[in-house]
Length: 614
Image (cartoon, rainbow, N blue to C red; front, side, top):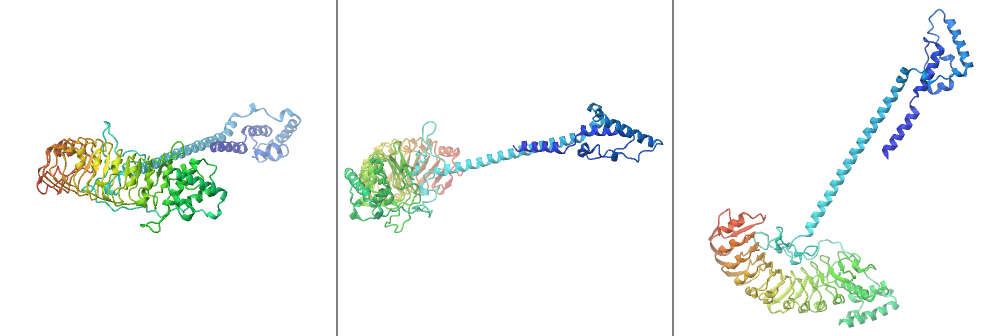
């Protein structure tokens, strides 16, 4: 458009300012005929000459050029010719074909020059536009690349792997899509990613203390309702409906009764429901909104023994609005609009999970309240009596208390597949606690950094679907007899370090055909390393340091051709490092590969074999 406008302007200017060479040539020829060959014509303005030609013709004849003796005769002849021409209309305008071609070419020369200048300016303008267009394309490509790299970095950040040394727990073994961070190889075998951090040892620093909730100070104000503004024609039918719902589900409705005061989560949820006047919604939707509203008031800015003045939720988008609860932050619904997941990690939750979540029991299968300040004990766990269809519970890094192992109410979670309760305040002898026996479908069990005592429950050895077992940093005693059950056919990761486990490593450990990562460090294990450890073809990481193991390093470990980490230091071992092990590690490309031993003492290991000697 700019080019067209520029060309139109140039064309208009040309038509207004350029002289007309043909018209000028005709006028000059006519005057030359009248004045003779030796007459000099004074140049006049070409634009005015066609109007003033007859009136000013006498003034255009120069008298100074007449040098011949017949000057007077020539003047008289010119006057006569002028009169004759004036009386003959045919002589007023000369035909164009009588014009001088030489004069034409001379007159057209300035026009050609100006046209060339215009063409050059157009070409230059087009070149500038092309350059600007190319520059714009380059800028767009650069910006797109920057955003693509940034998005990839964010994706990588979201997919960070579990690390006991980073104070993370097994719930993070699943990435943001809910898939396992241990992706199968082409042959279907699982492999440990290179950025999967190690348990305590030479490869990683010691664990930091649990951090609790997020660092961001920004929170969302709590939604409140003045009950004096409510319409009895709305509150009365709503109260009757809620009371009937409590009775059908076998729940205690006392916190909803007026005698409980106006500050219970149930009463506040009731007030919000009445103010919002949701009578046009179907009954199931009303009850689900009420259950979520109770959850909101039960976990939002609720004082506990651990935090007397808590903040409100950090993110509460959509909550307690007329919008569908499927759009509320952290709520995921199925295709029928029923709540199936509550995702609330790192969101400043306090208080406890309300029993009203049982209203959602038919479809609620996933709860994630990791890294909050939820404080529960005793009857607070009654909510789990109703969540019989729950499949995944992630509650790491909270204030969950129990004196006798796992809360007994959790025995109702018979369909549970993932249980993550690391970094809480759970105590007691877990071996005498029968809760785990009611969870045969577990594939993930995380109980790290609690205060459990006794031996590791024998029932764990019968969990055929168990893939991840994290029980490090407790006070477990006894041995590894649960391995003798021989049913851990799917176990891929087992970290039991940081306990007080004693006795020998049983030969049955050789039955863990799928094991890829095994950590038994910082315990009181004794005896020899069993040869059966060499029968684990998928083993990639093995930590046995800081125990009381003795004897020579088994030659059978040479069979572990996928091994990337083997830490044997701080034991009582002796002899030579098997050459086959040195050959295995010589071709390892893993950046954090480690082969350690007491090679400053009784173990003989060449410097180009062991990565570190103790």
